[in-house]
Amino acid sequence: MAERVGAGQVPAAALERLVRVAQSERRSPSVVAAVVHGRDVVWSTAVGIAAPGAADGVAPTPATVDHAYRIGSITKTFTAVAILQLRDQGALDLDDRLEQHLDVPAHRGPTIRRLLAHLSGLQREPPGAIWQSLVDHDEQELLARLPEAEQALPPGQRFHYSNLAFALLGQVVARRAGAPYEAVVRERLLDPLGLARTSFDPVGPHAQGLYVRPWEDVADREPHVRLAATAAAAQLWSTAADLCAWGAFLADPDPAVLAPATAEELRVPQTISDEIAWLRGVGLGVILYRRGERIYVGHGGAMPGFLAEVVYAPKDRIGAVVLVNTTSGFDTQALALDLAEQAVEALAGPDEWRPGTTAPDALRSVLGSWWSEGAEFTFRWRDDALEAQPVGAARGRFVSRLVQEGDDLYRVSAGRERGELLRLHRALSGAVESMTWATYAVTRQPQSFVVEGGDGA
Image (tube, rainbow, N blue to C red; front, side):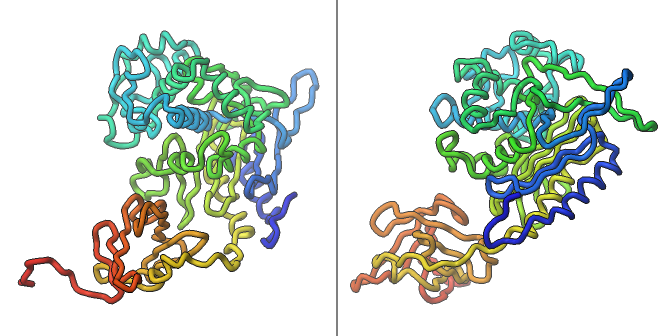
């Protein structure tokens, strides 16, 4: 078990109890769970059986943290990253229409972005009987039957989950990468990231998917269905350790595989999927979970006999994974978030403060308090960059980070007013006497609104 230097210890007993209570109360044959801190798995456990015994006296197989489980729709996050890799390489644009990349006989208008964010409005599943369409349809049949699919909602109106959308995205990946979808994911993601236990088919040791009867304590075997044209939506298997690494990657990627700025873009909310409490949103192929003031990135998954969840808090660099081998009745999302929150409380803390660099001479007269539209802001030099924050805002909230773009010209690279310009205006002495930020006046002393020609009615 790893431990972060200067931080608390993993609350192993409390985490273990959460898992065991959930496994017992929700009657899951097994639960495998893990907590990741940074890129290190700092705690893991396995409770229950990965596979039942047989009538000929073969004993049940105890679950271990090394067992692979089906992860269902967590596959969508791999599809999303593959799409963004292709975007970064210039093979597509997120606002391209589907018809620009596939010869589709219908539903040509949804953009790549809307397909990723479940805003296309396309019906949930491919046309036809649910499991027949998922298992039997190859790429040609999927496209041929696309005219039968309903436009369930107008594009862009609101969140509507669609496996059909991700099946089409998988075909875009294959078309633009020039190789089958599964080969693209292996060569561009699984192999470079060392996810050796993540695969499109079960590789031992792996759990058996089970259906637990509601009124009997009996677990029946579920078939390991092999998805065809819909593999990009839900086909992958993985382990707790591999999913911990993947969760960390979604927050802090290897730049050789995905640019950090692209990973940040992946996590930008595109819509809210929970319109009542606003506790769950959708990025570009990822789900965003809110617990208090903390945001987790990840996804859940479900396939016959399996449920899975991965969550990771980028700010705290702590996350959790939950894998179970039951078809339904187990809230993997709640357990994963509970495990992560317990770990955050024990491990996370304020970063150790250390002296930094001196601000450049050209910016020394910018530091300190300024005013704009009656609000006070503090400008400071921190971590080799100019920052601005409203006075009274909690630490880390509404911070604007600026980078130099020209002489006395800075652009907000992150935070409040992102993308806007800050212009410095100097007196004859060379000191900055005023600034213009997003076209608003910024002055050393508070002042009323000044509108040329206004008479203050």
